[in-house]
Image (cartoon, rainbow, N blue to C red; front, side):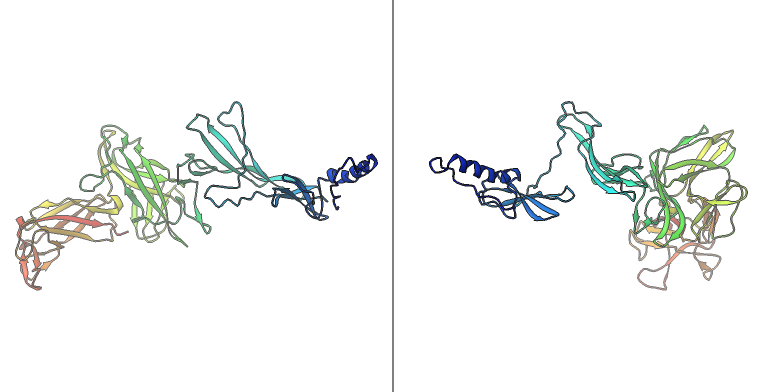
Length: 470
């Protein structure tokens, strides 16, 4: 419509009849809210007026004294509000514009649900359903330490439900442990391009199928604690283990689990009982024990013997038999106990990360010596190196204090029978290496290759290193 221009009301010039006619003509302006194709010529600061765009579009403006502010738009045909506009031209760093949903309850309490933003849709039956909803919940109303969380819902399979929440951190529905804290996300799994990176997925660990970390002594050897004299062994501190299950398109597939102060019970069968952790998909660990020695081998057919754990190293897959078949199991053996008289009499914890580095022993062994090393790898199948490392403690020939020699030679019977000390794997937890009967330790001169030097036993210390190799 075109607005009627506001006339000048002069009681000396306008008759009652003229005034009535003008008021009648201006009534449409008032009733339409000053609607027109353009801003009314009689506009004043604060006036709100609709602008007619088309049969399906109207815009609502407010005149601020120098220009028109667009408040929103609506469709006069289907009688719907199409858009609301919040706009700020403030050049400062503060937020703006501002939308406040204020629940000013006179009795606020924890679990109160605050304002909501909802997204509606129509289904195939033309019925309205809420597709998503964002809201907030009060957790604590204490002045100065208030807590709240955002709640995000979406419709899946016809059901609108909470999918994630945000407090200090972000946490997903279904994840245990609640709010993980600032900067953290708590979820039951993580995927990248559809590949699961959770506890059961491809990830990078330094060594597979082993204890990754736990309490250690001053030499770096496992020191998980535990007491003898009963049918229960309880370790002290946190143990982190990783179990392998082959590989996928993204690399090695492993589960990493952690447990604090794990406890093994029912250790009453005389002989040796083997302690293990079963790792669940969420990284939780369940302690268990059995009397069958775990087997580590390159590969082979499934071993179906009930409760027998067999690990194929080339595949990096472990399975447990049930009497008729064998199923892949995320199981890691962490130690063993000796049971006598129905109670635990000795505890052996397996080496961390599949490697053993002994403490140094002063003075080299003499001739015809047999050195027994308790490495506690828990497996006889070793494809890594066994190293004898000697370190100079007192200047010896061309060697200075601190110099290190790996695998010095030994000598059998004559100077022509020099070799590295023979090394033998004697059990899952032990090895033996020996020295010759003619001379114990030799090495080339550090400064003149080919010149044989007899190492003075008292000028050196030694230790043994073994890496499982898988």
